[in-house]
Image: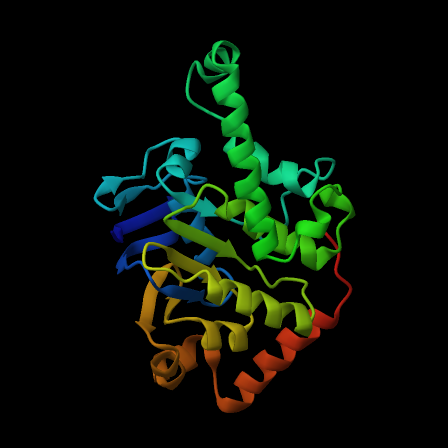
Length: 272
Protein backbone atom coordinates (compact mmCIF):
# COMPACT_ATOMS: atom_id res chain seq x y z
CA UNK A 1 0.00 0.00 0.00
CA UNK A 2 1.28 3.47 -0.86
CA UNK A 3 -0.04 6.98 -1.41
CA UNK A 4 0.89 8.05 -4.91
CA UNK A 5 0.82 11.72 -5.84
CA UNK A 6 1.26 12.26 -9.59
CA UNK A 7 1.68 15.67 -11.26
CA UNK A 8 -0.66 17.23 -8.70
CA UNK A 9 -1.67 20.75 -9.67
CA UNK A 10 -4.07 23.24 -8.12
CA UNK A 11 -4.56 26.66 -9.67
CA UNK A 12 -6.77 29.64 -8.95
CA UNK A 13 -6.71 31.51 -12.21
CA UNK A 14 -3.12 32.63 -12.70
CA UNK A 15 -2.16 31.66 -9.14
CA UNK A 16 -0.51 28.24 -8.92
CA UNK A 17 -1.10 26.91 -5.38
CA UNK A 18 0.25 23.43 -6.18
CA UNK A 19 2.59 23.01 -9.12
CA UNK A 20 3.07 19.58 -10.72
CA UNK A 21 3.85 17.80 -7.44
CA UNK A 22 4.78 14.11 -7.58
CA UNK A 23 5.85 11.74 -4.78
CA UNK A 24 5.14 8.32 -3.31
CA UNK A 25 4.57 7.93 0.42
CA UNK A 26 4.96 4.53 2.04
CA UNK A 27 3.21 3.10 5.12
CA UNK A 28 5.11 2.67 8.36
CA UNK A 29 6.56 6.18 8.07
CA UNK A 30 5.93 9.59 9.57
CA UNK A 31 6.36 12.36 7.01
CA UNK A 32 6.96 15.91 8.19
CA UNK A 33 5.65 18.55 5.79
CA UNK A 34 7.32 21.95 6.07
CA UNK A 35 7.71 25.14 4.10
CA UNK A 36 7.20 28.89 4.50
CA UNK A 37 3.73 30.40 4.64
CA UNK A 38 2.09 30.06 1.25
CA UNK A 39 4.27 27.09 0.27
CA UNK A 40 1.21 24.88 -0.33
CA UNK A 41 1.23 22.71 2.80
CA UNK A 42 -2.44 23.11 3.71
CA UNK A 43 -3.42 22.97 0.04
CA UNK A 44 -1.62 19.61 -0.23
CA UNK A 45 -3.54 18.19 2.74
CA UNK A 46 -6.86 19.62 1.54
CA UNK A 47 -6.38 18.05 -1.89
CA UNK A 48 -5.68 14.62 -0.41
CA UNK A 49 -8.67 14.87 1.94
CA UNK A 50 -11.00 16.03 -0.84
CA UNK A 51 -11.66 19.47 0.65
CA UNK A 52 -10.26 21.02 -2.54
CA UNK A 53 -10.69 19.82 -6.11
CA UNK A 54 -7.49 19.23 -8.05
CA UNK A 55 -6.89 21.05 -11.33
CA UNK A 56 -4.88 18.19 -12.83
CA UNK A 57 -2.89 15.14 -11.80
CA UNK A 58 -3.99 12.28 -9.59
CA UNK A 59 -3.99 10.96 -6.02
CA UNK A 60 -4.06 7.19 -5.53
CA UNK A 61 -4.13 5.10 -2.38
CA UNK A 62 -3.09 1.51 -2.98
CA UNK A 63 -3.93 2.02 -6.64
CA UNK A 64 -7.42 3.40 -5.98
CA UNK A 65 -7.92 6.89 -7.34
CA UNK A 66 -9.13 9.30 -4.65
CA UNK A 67 -9.32 12.61 -6.49
CA UNK A 68 -12.81 13.39 -7.71
CA UNK A 69 -14.47 11.39 -4.94
CA UNK A 70 -16.76 12.94 -2.33
CA UNK A 71 -15.06 13.68 0.98
CA UNK A 72 -16.98 10.98 2.84
CA UNK A 73 -15.92 8.40 0.24
CA UNK A 74 -12.30 9.45 0.66
CA UNK A 75 -12.76 9.01 4.40
CA UNK A 76 -14.24 5.54 3.87
CA UNK A 77 -11.26 4.72 1.64
CA UNK A 78 -9.01 5.27 4.65
CA UNK A 79 -8.02 8.95 4.80
CA UNK A 80 -8.50 10.88 8.05
CA UNK A 81 -7.41 14.34 9.11
CA UNK A 82 -7.27 16.97 11.82
CA UNK A 83 -7.45 20.74 11.34
CA UNK A 84 -5.41 23.80 12.28
CA UNK A 85 -8.42 25.03 14.23
CA UNK A 86 -9.98 22.37 16.44
CA UNK A 87 -13.27 21.05 15.07
CA UNK A 88 -15.11 19.14 17.76
CA UNK A 89 -18.79 18.92 18.64
CA UNK A 90 -18.50 21.05 21.77
CA UNK A 91 -21.82 20.00 23.32
CA UNK A 92 -21.23 16.30 22.76
CA UNK A 93 -19.19 14.32 25.26
CA UNK A 94 -15.67 13.20 24.40
CA UNK A 95 -16.98 9.67 23.89
CA UNK A 96 -19.85 10.82 21.69
CA UNK A 97 -17.41 12.78 19.51
CA UNK A 98 -15.78 9.47 18.64
CA UNK A 99 -18.94 7.37 18.41
CA UNK A 100 -20.59 9.73 15.93
CA UNK A 101 -17.76 9.04 13.47
CA UNK A 102 -18.70 5.37 13.45
CA UNK A 103 -22.40 5.86 12.76
CA UNK A 104 -23.33 3.77 9.71
CA UNK A 105 -23.30 5.76 6.50
CA UNK A 106 -24.48 3.07 4.11
CA UNK A 107 -27.97 3.36 2.65
CA UNK A 108 -30.60 1.45 4.60
CA UNK A 109 -28.50 0.93 7.73
CA UNK A 110 -31.01 2.63 10.05
CA UNK A 111 -33.85 0.48 8.71
CA UNK A 112 -31.78 -2.67 9.22
CA UNK A 113 -31.11 -1.61 12.82
CA UNK A 114 -34.88 -1.50 13.44
CA UNK A 115 -35.39 -5.07 12.22
CA UNK A 116 -32.20 -6.54 13.67
CA UNK A 117 -32.06 -4.58 16.91
CA UNK A 118 -30.31 -7.29 18.94
CA UNK A 119 -27.44 -7.43 16.48
CA UNK A 120 -27.41 -3.63 16.27
CA UNK A 121 -27.17 -3.37 20.06
CA UNK A 122 -24.15 -5.68 20.12
CA UNK A 123 -22.57 -3.66 17.32
CA UNK A 124 -23.11 -0.41 19.24
CA UNK A 125 -21.46 -1.94 22.30
CA UNK A 126 -18.43 -2.96 20.24
CA UNK A 127 -18.22 0.55 18.80
CA UNK A 128 -18.39 2.03 22.29
CA UNK A 129 -15.58 -0.20 23.58
CA UNK A 130 -13.44 0.65 20.55
CA UNK A 131 -13.90 4.37 21.27
CA UNK A 132 -13.15 3.93 24.97
CA UNK A 133 -9.96 2.07 24.09
CA UNK A 134 -8.83 5.03 21.98
CA UNK A 135 -9.58 7.41 24.83
CA UNK A 136 -7.49 5.22 27.14
CA UNK A 137 -4.64 5.24 24.64
CA UNK A 138 -4.54 9.04 24.80
CA UNK A 139 -5.18 9.22 28.56
CA UNK A 140 -8.62 10.75 27.96
CA UNK A 141 -10.89 8.11 29.48
CA UNK A 142 -11.59 10.24 32.56
CA UNK A 143 -13.09 12.86 30.22
CA UNK A 144 -15.33 10.36 28.39
CA UNK A 145 -18.60 11.76 29.77
CA UNK A 146 -17.59 15.43 29.78
CA UNK A 147 -18.60 17.84 27.05
CA UNK A 148 -15.75 18.31 24.59
CA UNK A 149 -16.02 22.09 24.76
CA UNK A 150 -15.23 22.07 28.49
CA UNK A 151 -11.98 20.12 28.18
CA UNK A 152 -8.59 21.84 28.57
CA UNK A 153 -7.21 23.01 25.24
CA UNK A 154 -4.45 20.40 25.14
CA UNK A 155 -6.96 17.60 25.80
CA UNK A 156 -9.12 18.88 22.96
CA UNK A 157 -6.14 18.59 20.62
CA UNK A 158 -5.63 14.98 21.70
CA UNK A 159 -9.34 14.25 21.34
CA UNK A 160 -9.33 15.49 17.77
CA UNK A 161 -6.51 13.07 16.93
CA UNK A 162 -8.49 10.28 18.60
CA UNK A 163 -11.46 11.12 16.44
CA UNK A 164 -9.31 10.96 13.31
CA UNK A 165 -8.13 7.50 14.35
CA UNK A 166 -11.52 6.05 15.20
CA UNK A 167 -12.14 4.57 11.74
CA UNK A 168 -8.65 3.01 11.69
CA UNK A 169 -7.37 5.04 8.72
CA UNK A 170 -4.60 4.12 6.31
CA UNK A 171 -3.55 7.77 5.89
CA UNK A 172 -3.54 10.21 8.82
CA UNK A 173 -3.16 13.92 8.04
CA UNK A 174 -2.28 16.11 11.04
CA UNK A 175 -2.50 19.83 10.26
CA UNK A 176 -0.45 21.77 12.85
CA UNK A 177 -1.35 19.48 15.78
CA UNK A 178 1.01 21.34 18.16
CA UNK A 179 -0.56 24.76 17.54
CA UNK A 180 -1.24 26.44 20.87
CA UNK A 181 0.30 23.70 22.99
CA UNK A 182 2.81 24.44 25.74
CA UNK A 183 6.18 22.66 25.89
CA UNK A 184 4.94 19.85 28.12
CA UNK A 185 1.92 19.21 25.90
CA UNK A 186 4.10 19.26 22.78
CA UNK A 187 6.39 16.62 24.27
CA UNK A 188 3.36 14.47 25.04
CA UNK A 189 2.00 15.04 21.54
CA UNK A 190 5.28 13.92 19.97
CA UNK A 191 5.24 10.76 22.07
CA UNK A 192 1.61 10.00 21.18
CA UNK A 193 2.20 10.46 17.45
CA UNK A 194 5.36 8.34 17.54
CA UNK A 195 3.36 5.54 19.17
CA UNK A 196 0.92 5.60 16.24
CA UNK A 197 3.61 4.41 13.83
CA UNK A 198 2.54 1.05 12.39
CA UNK A 199 3.22 -0.90 9.19
CA UNK A 200 -0.14 -0.13 7.58
CA UNK A 201 -0.39 3.61 8.33
CA UNK A 202 1.01 6.67 6.54
CA UNK A 203 1.25 9.72 8.81
CA UNK A 204 1.73 13.23 7.40
CA UNK A 205 2.36 16.05 9.87
CA UNK A 206 2.28 19.75 8.98
CA UNK A 207 4.02 21.72 11.68
CA UNK A 208 5.96 24.96 12.19
CA UNK A 209 7.71 23.54 15.26
CA UNK A 210 11.01 22.50 13.67
CA UNK A 211 12.26 20.69 16.75
CA UNK A 212 9.13 18.52 16.82
CA UNK A 213 9.26 17.79 13.08
CA UNK A 214 12.97 16.98 12.97
CA UNK A 215 12.85 14.69 15.99
CA UNK A 216 9.58 12.93 15.06
CA UNK A 217 9.72 12.43 11.29
CA UNK A 218 11.27 9.58 9.35
CA UNK A 219 11.22 11.75 6.23
CA UNK A 220 10.76 15.49 5.75
CA UNK A 221 9.09 17.00 2.68
CA UNK A 222 9.92 20.64 1.93
CA UNK A 223 7.49 22.62 -0.22
CA UNK A 224 8.25 26.01 -1.74
CA UNK A 225 5.88 28.02 -3.94
CA UNK A 226 3.63 25.00 -4.37
CA UNK A 227 6.40 22.72 -5.61
CA UNK A 228 8.61 20.06 -4.08
CA UNK A 229 11.91 21.66 -3.10
CA UNK A 230 13.50 18.70 -1.31
CA UNK A 231 12.67 15.42 0.39
CA UNK A 232 14.92 13.40 2.68
CA UNK A 233 15.72 12.44 6.23
CA UNK A 234 15.67 15.20 8.86
CA UNK A 235 19.48 15.24 8.81
CA UNK A 236 19.59 15.56 5.02
CA UNK A 237 17.00 18.35 5.01
CA UNK A 238 18.81 20.39 7.65
CA UNK A 239 22.09 20.04 5.74
CA UNK A 240 20.66 20.94 2.31
CA UNK A 241 21.73 24.39 1.14
CA UNK A 242 18.63 24.97 -1.01
CA UNK A 243 16.37 24.30 1.97
CA UNK A 244 18.38 26.62 4.17
CA UNK A 245 18.25 29.38 1.59
CA UNK A 246 14.53 29.02 0.87
CA UNK A 247 13.24 28.34 4.36
CA UNK A 248 15.46 27.28 7.23
CA UNK A 249 18.09 29.95 6.70
CA UNK A 250 21.44 30.33 8.37
CA UNK A 251 22.18 28.91 11.81
CA UNK A 252 21.23 32.26 13.36
CA UNK A 253 17.94 32.18 11.47
CA UNK A 254 17.39 28.61 12.66
CA UNK A 255 17.77 29.88 16.21
CA UNK A 256 15.19 32.57 15.43
CA UNK A 257 12.77 29.90 14.13
CA UNK A 258 13.17 27.83 17.28
CA UNK A 259 12.70 30.90 19.47
CA UNK A 260 9.59 31.88 17.48
CA UNK A 261 8.14 28.40 18.01
CA UNK A 262 8.74 28.68 21.75
CA UNK A 263 7.12 32.11 21.82
CA UNK A 264 4.02 30.83 20.00
CA UNK A 265 3.61 28.13 22.64
CA UNK A 266 3.83 30.65 25.48
CA UNK A 267 1.22 32.97 24.02
CA UNK A 268 -2.35 32.84 25.19
CA UNK A 269 -4.15 29.94 23.54
CA UNK A 270 -7.39 31.03 21.94
CA UNK A 271 -9.65 28.77 19.92
CA UNK A 272 -10.46 30.11 16.48
